[in-house]
Length: 155
Image (cartoon, rainbow, N blue to C red; front, side):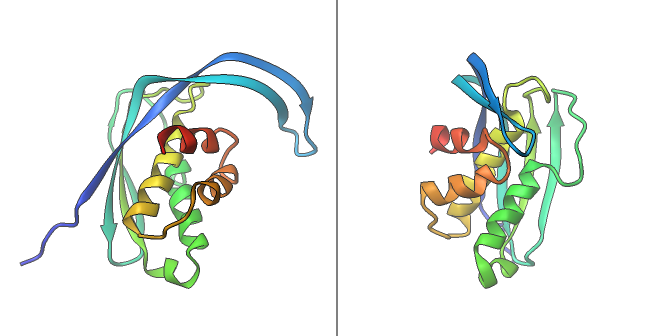
């Protein structure tokens, strides 16, 4: 008899910018910003389940936001970045990532970044990696400037 792996369910909240000021431009073309964010109770939902084959598989179960998904979205990129950080052990780590998308894309509400933060936090727990908050933020920063904010906010 096969026992189903437990599911970890996480809320990935949206944010609103209450203040945004461009203060400069970086060498990579991104802007330096001063900003104040506030979380709101509009959330995407993430379900994570362990896989034993080392694969990372993302599926979308609901998409009330009408988002068009790329094959390698921030959820899967976050999982692969965490696997890479795990080193040799990472090859055997796998997960099913189920996304219930409610936050609209390209609305400045941080939906993708929040989803990535939830995946990093959840898989760190499920994979028993024991990475610290600063380590998760370092990985998150490689995915997007807003990801560390969401890691701190959700942790």
